[in-house]
Length: 266
Image (cartoon, rainbow, N blue to C red; front, side, top):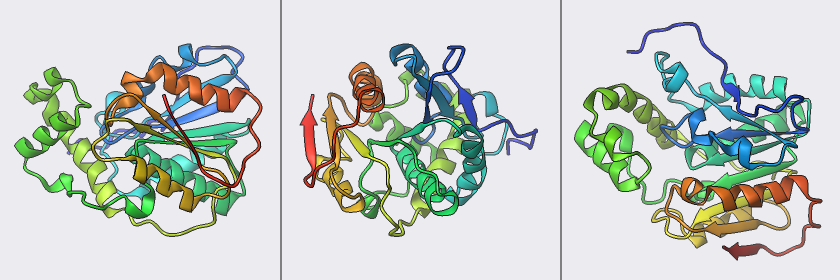
């Protein structure tokens, strides 16, 4: 157990501009990830975009807090902070598990508070009705097998995977995140009012083009999808083109949505 020190905020501001940018971008990390996933984003995005990262407990500066293993507990904690920070126009980004949390946080904001982001970016994630298709329950694996799964995913540096002391601290958080994923049950809801862009990696073994296109069933109008070079963690390998695509959609005038899905590969 990690113990129960006082809880820190879930939202960390990463931008250093003062005054803040006029558009706030809230970024939700993948399983096991934290706010550092988005380090350097503020420097690569226009000053108009004020970058904030979601920092769940059990990692980085919240390492000694107990991790959260249910989506509802996550939403109960993060939505009130989003409400405090959403006085300005805002957008949401989430990668993998973070895309699920992002979608569900937007649903709560829409259904319970009548608030919509100006744009939603869903990255490296299957359309939610198919999110469990063929997926193993990783949170129940023995330690050696779970570490090998992390190695195969290619998202954790080898020096960390080989550091037994560090992995001993990290694995409870990874298990909690994968438990959250395994317990997730998609419930149909009113489509988001905001434009939605989905990103995928050209060589992602778990999220193919067909999985991205299935998001079109959950949104109204046009689904905007972009495939970037890289595997499941293309948000690192293709960080600059990813951020350029996001900046265009936030800073430039929005294109009039059409009826059919659009798709581009870079």
